[in-house]
Length: 348
Image 1 (tube, rainbow, N blue to C red):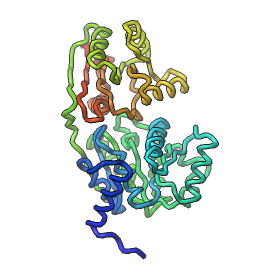
Image 2: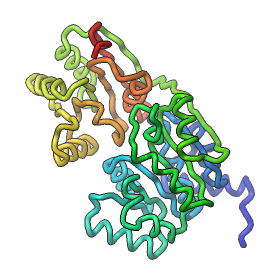
Image 3: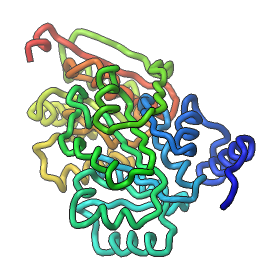
Image 4: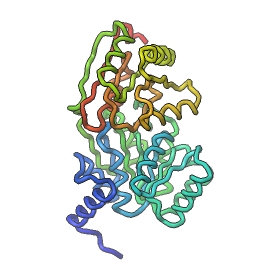
């Protein structure tokens, strides 16, 4: 049996792996603590703001340990984005979801059979279908990471009932550590995450939500089209997300912006799945720069150069507002967060 590496040796290996695969010279605040918890086989609850580098906290341990880390994620787009990005770096990663084609299934099977798979992203619904857990138990799983962990809490801003079953994984993987990650969680939500996932003596890490690169503006709404257009024109050729309260408003505002020569597209849950997929893919690939959306355009946005986030009405909660504005300036460069309100917003 190989003796565990000393702390200096492990740190050298950690930073060498970080440099080799991701090209970073150092880790951000709390990333090191979260990664150490995973390497030590400890449960953890990690709250880092959007852009704080949560994904590295479960990606890097898989490469340092040279074992499989399973990442539970709520959105296919989010999973596929991460898999595509990791594969570009040469990291053996795959996703398991209902939209996986025959080629994707064959690739996943090949990587699992030859032992090369290091990161497997899976939707919570997929975990409990078609003997998937039995197959997963045959793999060398080092840790299970729960991304967007606030979805498990009835007190969170994006509760998803299917997340409640994740505690069942404890029965199937009794010796495997669990790490829960989210960008926003009040103390009440954090307590619910700990309870629902049955985290055992977890390391709890809560990052600062101070984002000095973000400028917040709160203004009365008097001419929505003009105010939104002016804000977008302050950031020419940059990415912008405009959040609206209703589907109808996204359609009308996107059309108004188009008439002003701004290439905006509406996005909401009422669109066909194929249309939503195309729009979000165009935005991620920088073929589309302005999205006018309901909060259906939420988790899974992985574009670092969003220079503007506009709320055309009051957000659902302060927690939701923090999460949504946090999608701006993920590259660390200055960005604007504009909230336009009216007295009637509180009655909606």
